[in-house]
Length: 237
Image (cartoon, rainbow, N blue to C red; front, side):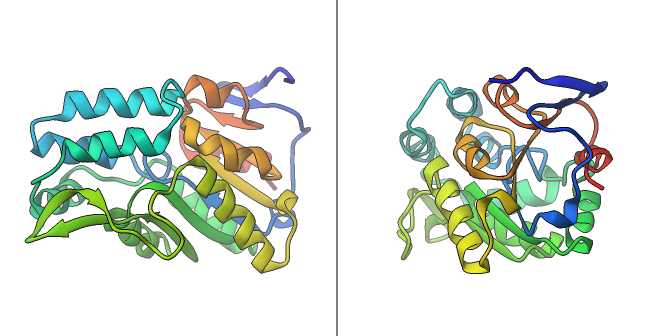
């Protein structure tokens, strides 16, 4: 693996010479939790159940790559959330969720350069649908929480494509959307922070790590460890 070069404080590049032309890319795919937004939604929901420490420990291990089966880690966390009221999710969105610094500027720049935008998340449609609307993203895929009588059942709703968005599903969605657009994987950008983002980052023409976990920092082509996501624009003209 090529060593990363710190071109500015907290801004690292690996395997390419900046600047790149943003308009040479046609699709950008974003992770949601801790990438587009400031929280891990499942951890904040867990606080309503009094299980945040347990759930957050599993989340951290999964994002660092210490738990390699993302689906298993997610189902373990969801089981701890059984019975949480829907109102708790509304409270998380209203009181805790914020867009990360520089996200709106970066998404706007991508849109102006002609890129299509994709949110692909191991999180939940309850939040991703709102973020898609808020950022005016073109496409989104996430997991759908199963809810009965306004309470979480601890499970997920099966979808036509499957049930769980994990790292391999993120990769598959990125490649599928690229194919439907008639573009090569090299014309895509993948932005994430955790281990389950690595499969889609590996096939993209440019991988951007935003305040990444160590395993992601070691592999991404462009890493932002301090400041906002818009710092990437210094290397994308």
